[in-house]
Every structure is written in C-alpha cells, then in structure tokens.
Length: 311
Image (cartoon, rainbow, N blue to C red; front, side, top):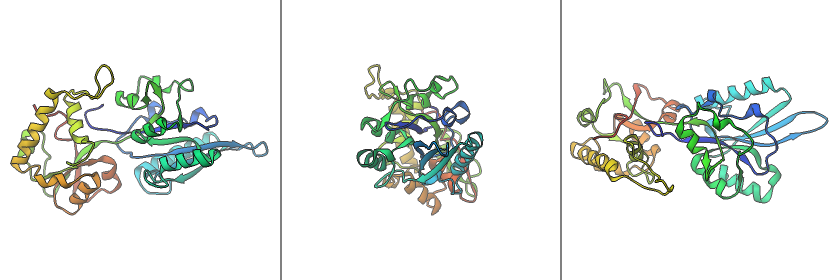
C-alpha cells in the first residue's frame, strides 16, 4: 500500500464472457490507479452478427462513471470509450448504469443474471476489491490467468498488483484508485498542519469516520508506519509496536480537543463530509473522489497529517 489509503476498482472477467478485444483491456501503465476516480464499471457479452460484423460490448457502470454525468471520472471514462471506438469502428459500446451496492446493484445484478439469464451476464465488470472478492468466491468471475500478462508489467503500483490477486489468481485489472486526504477550509486555516505536533495546535475539531467498522484511517497510519496486515502464512495480524503509537496519538488528540469524543458518532465518509459542508468543522479527512465531485468554495487539499504515523 502507498502512504495514503487507496482502494481498487478492477475489471473482472465473468464466467460466461466471450473474447474481449485486447485493446479494450484497461489497466495498462497509462491507466494506472489515480486519486481522481472512485467506484466502478462492467462489460457484457460481445455479440457479433454475420450480417453486421459489429461487435457489441454492453458496459455497466455506477453513477459516478455514467458517461452522461459531469464528474471527472465519468468524463475520463467517456474519453477512453470514444478513443477505443475510433480505433475499433467495428465495435459498438452500450453503457448501462448500475448502483454500486444494494438491490439492483452490481453484485446483486450479477448474481441474479447468472442464475436466471446467463446470456445477459456481461463480459467484464469493474468492481471495488471487496465486491470483486465476494463475486469471485461466489463463482461469478473467471480469473485472467493465461489470458493476459498485463499484471506482469513493472509499472504497476505494488498495492494495485496485490489487490488484483485473490488466492494467487488474477481476478481483476486495476484501472482506478482513490485516496484519503485532508480537506481544509482556507478561510479559517491559512496552512494545514505539517506535523503531528502542529495538528494538536490546529483549529479544532478534525472530523473523520472514527466509528468506521473497517477503521480505514487507523489502518492507513498503521501501514504507513510499516505495520503489516498478514503474516508469513497469510493470516491476519497486527503489530502492537506499530499500532500503539497511533492509539497514543488518538488519546492526545482527544485531550487537546483535536478529535473530540463526539467524532465517534461518524461511521461513514458521507457523514463526515456532511459535517464539513455544514461548517461543524474546518478540517475533514475524506476521499479525494468526493472532494473532486463536489468541491466546496474556499477549500483545499493536503496530505493526511502527515503521511507517517506518530512516534
């Protein structure tokens, strides 16, 4: 993993997939994970009729990647689709928007289609790592092993290469990433904190999803300090020597008022962001994608305080 937390959106191959043109395969070095994109996409069975000689690729995307929307991710995705069709005029791409989660979402739709209408299952689907893992375990995905050597390219980030693998098989090709960053209100904070000591003296409070069940921010600091999540036998592990200084800092931040107890009411990034928008705080740790999709006036980005855990 890099200094800041990122997450993967991967193109996964479905079990019923036909052959996909190599040129469409995302995740080449030029499309390595970036901090400007968040959740997801899918490509359905390539259908070619002898009469038309046209290959149709049906693509499912979440709202953020809807080519008709105005988000940075959607614009970039649309540009890539247009660039591909210019090079491959015999290919027609049709896009469908799918929710990221819940009924009718990507995983739900894949499961339903696989059981009731296998021919409607897409060829490729872009999934966050957690959904990709679930889909692969359910047998909805086919590994890329033997189909492409793109993940052997040395230009991949280490974390992206790891996230593409599940049980030593490549189930995804990364094409987008996100990052946790500090967003601050420039009208209240001239310069963001540059050290842990500065952070304790910074305007209060600092808001983030302190009650996040996955503890993403804490794990970010932990891994930035060199902590590992899996031991040599691939079993979950935590290093107390790496984790203790982070918990100690949280205690200091509580006493100073930087991270007051009431921040523990926030379980999601959406809740934290809402607190920032409502001016309950002048500093929030959030995903870059959320900031870029809805950039507030008088705000700016900075690295998380800083990229190394407290000592």
